[in-house]
Image (cartoon, rainbow, N blue to C red; front, top):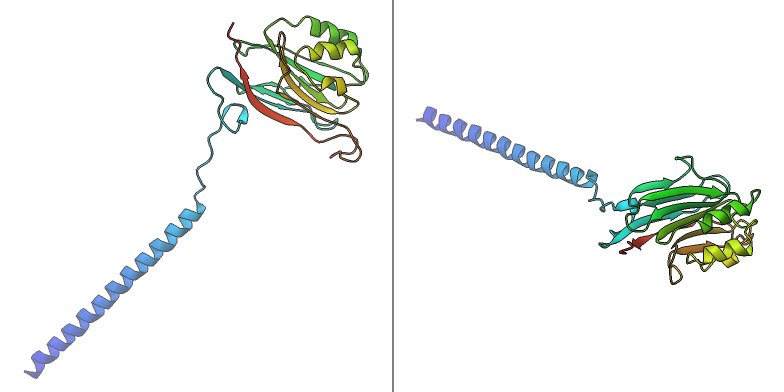
Amino acid sequence: MFRASGILKSAALILAFLLAVFLAFQLLEINVEFKLGSVMSRSLPESEAPVHKCGLSKACPPGHMAFKLTSGAASVVGPRMCLEDKLLMSSVKNNVGRGINIALLNGKTGELIKTAYYDMWAGDVAPFIKFLKEIEDGTIVMMASFDDSASKLNDEARKLIADLGSSAVGNLSFRDNWIFVGGKGIKTKTPFEQHIKNSADTNKYEGWPEVLEMEGCIPQRQT
């Protein structure tokens, strides 16, 4: 009798022990999974914002072409031009230079026609004027300053740029920063233009103002 009762007590103790071990492992597993889940949730990056053409903050509507334009930085880093995710001009492409940098594009397709730059510090303005006069109607014109873009500009050159839609070219001075998107045959002044004066009081770099950057959507020419 006593032996049977002892066996039952031992069996009960063993079951209690096994149950305690089982519950302990269950709690440990839950705790580990919780901690692991917390670590994973912290380590996983948030969903990245969608990347649009030329790195724009939002997509352009149908019938428009995405662009981003950056001026030169002092006399060190050249300007950068992008249209529809195609890099047109940059220091990396080795097709930029001191003065005014220009890209001409087909107003219907966005196809690159030509790039050029004209030194407005030590160069001659005559070739630049010739270039401006030969731009055909319907052409998109992108311009960006690098170092000095104004010292050699005369009234004729400024008038030709103003006819492309510029409002600021008349006030462009030594080492000002300037970026512009216009077009040949445009009837109004373009909304795509930025200009910052070279001023010792506000310059970000010694002798040069801060870099300008502009992005937007250019309407495609329909006719």
